[in-house]
Length: 63
Image 1 (cartoon, rainbow, N blue to C red):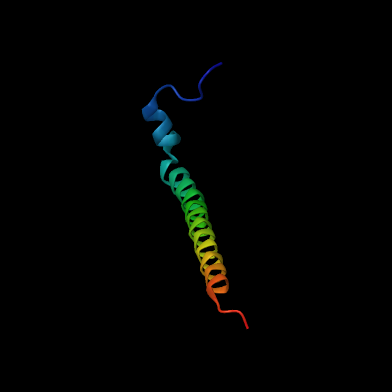
Image 2 (cartoon, rainbow, N blue to C red; image 1 turned 90 degrees about the vertical axis):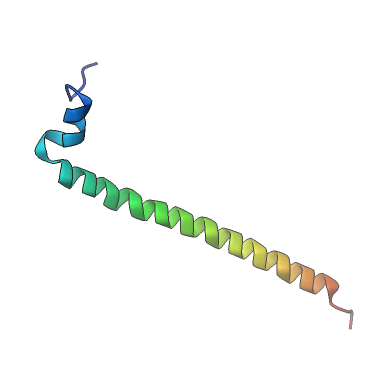
């Protein structure tokens, strides 16, 4: 299997298109990482709210 690049330096410069390539990678992976982080934080918030609601209902005096 042959590599498309002769060295790591060639890989990082991307044949003169490094700015375009690495900005594209950053603009793709950045929002995906933020979306994953936001989803994880929202999941934790929802679980906390459910726990709080269950505790409130459990400790509420019976009518």
